Length: 331
Image (cartoon, rainbow, N blue to C red; front, side, top):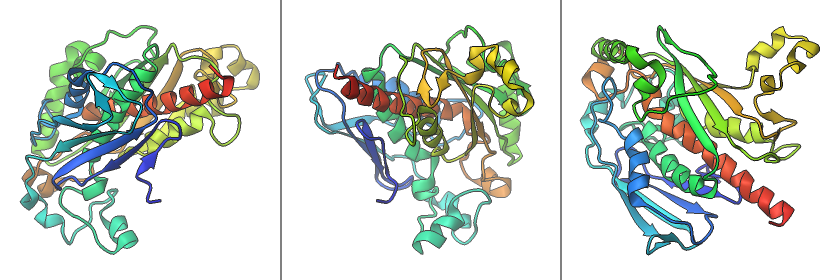
């Protein structure tokens, strides 16, 4: 196994390189007779696709999904679902300067150390473009758990910060409006200036999971929090994941923390308790900086386009555990 697959009852295997002919994913474990909408899938892909958000990469890709198997007359068949997306706007010459140089924090050097060969064009398998496969799988995971609401939003980007765990959130397809409201244009200007100067920045993302049924997760190695953490850490730029109060737990006594059940983040003993699940994810600054960033087409901050990826990985874990729990109780 080379680590290209994820999940047990609901599983995905992604394939393709950033500057190869196409990217794709094979999804197994999707129940039969679920209604499929290519338009709804495309909406999710468009949220992640390059070229749609100001202040991000200038690479433009339509990211048009092509269904190869597993769907018939708008319904899932219960068989493996294969979907590909063609790469149409590669500019591999942008990466000539990286052939013999390694970006700090990226997989350039470690990929070569592991395999003895690497595709330096766009980072190959380590490119953020691989995450479109996860968004596709996340769409199908959402069909399995339609009652669960998953919302990821930026709570910190450079100097901009917002409430981490609001009781209510006004949904928006625009990540800047969703997180920062009337500061949207200021955030875009900040990112645009970073891009012009060849600089990058990191930040944090809040994840709110509402209406998750209790009982998801196993008591030992497959704790729900453990699988959520693994799924989120598998996103290339993620450097930390926390649940509930997270690292702040070190500052409390037992009696203080027990006074408010929300401090535990909706998971106790590795099993969901039916309350809101609250997670935070930290992203490092984009590795490509300086002249290489100015010459190529890179995101000064990966977070705005990473939100649908974060949501998808969470849905994938929840759908997998939902199917496992359903099999366990015999529903």
